[in-house]
Length: 172
Figure 1 (tube, one colour):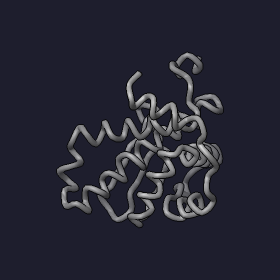
Figure 2 (cartoon, one colour):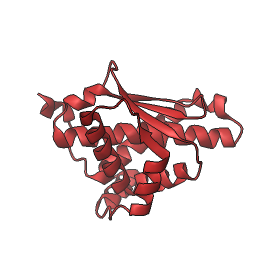
Figure 3 (cartoon, helix red, strand yellow):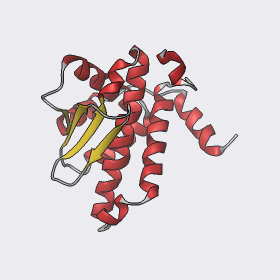
């Protein structure tokens, strides 16, 4: 069994409770757009809760909060269920696809947590770290940035309890 998989499975065993101070600090730094509807707010809240249950999510959220610039999350109609991150201004913007709202309960929360972690703790955090190192624009075009964001999303999903190998099967 690959070492990364063993590590990921070991971390899933006991995710531990979410420290309220982290959740409170996260809510102060990362906000949902005021244009969000009730269903979007509920899905966002569940995604954040699941993301912060995961040890990887907690650790990377702490790193993000150590680079204090605001982030706004919003929902938009996208071609896929995924998301995107825009970091060109003083406020980073993370977009989640409204297609996530069509998924069934727990599935929606888990996939939204993975996408949020991918965009926020993958792309936004790594972009801020790269900018601090003086290589912001160069880093943005690297394939490694996307690979990193994918791994972050997958780890958060596994650690938060995602166990389905084919999420599309339950969509039908």
